[in-house]
Length: 114
Length: 111
Image 1 (tube, chains in turn orange, green):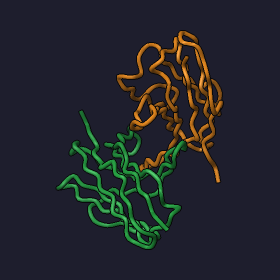
Image 2: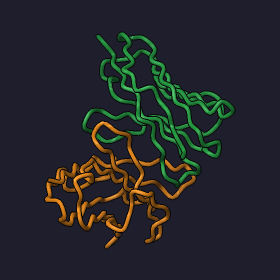
Image 3: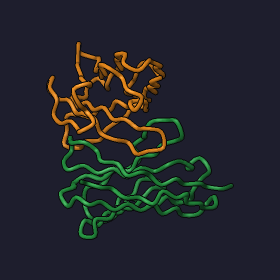
Image 4: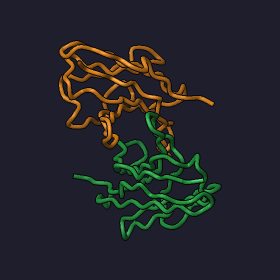
């Protein structure tokens, strides 16, 4: 069964450092998303991406964040200068090119900012 | 602010019982409704979706939608200890737009 994959599973970084979180969406999906979940809190939308551009972004997704689809398979989230409050689980999700809109989530990357 | 509200629980039910999970949403423009299951430390896993008023059944799961009352529910029949997890309600305006999640309801099924 096809699945969304994410690397690394856990990333530890120092405050102010740049991190890149990687995702490989399901191969025939065209819509891609990043969400985050701070420990004990709800899953929050960050950004959606379609046709090589951002479709929608939340208030959380400020200038420190960027997304890219560098090739036909990877989808990345970059945080330029990490803050302590960026510590969270980051989930990538993808959905098919239909009207159904089911979003399938990857296993997540746990980001710890020290 | 578009909100999705869920009782955080825990909701405790004995094995074999019916678990009833509820969710309300504030945005009347919401069109698509999803239930995800999240085990501790894991990612959300899609278990049900519903778009039309009424009931939708899939195995032991039944989703119910009442758009007039802005209310979505999930029934789990013959609950099993393996159903113990947090159940997340999520809504979106259209098929490809962002999901807005509730905080989730923690379900505990005791043997």
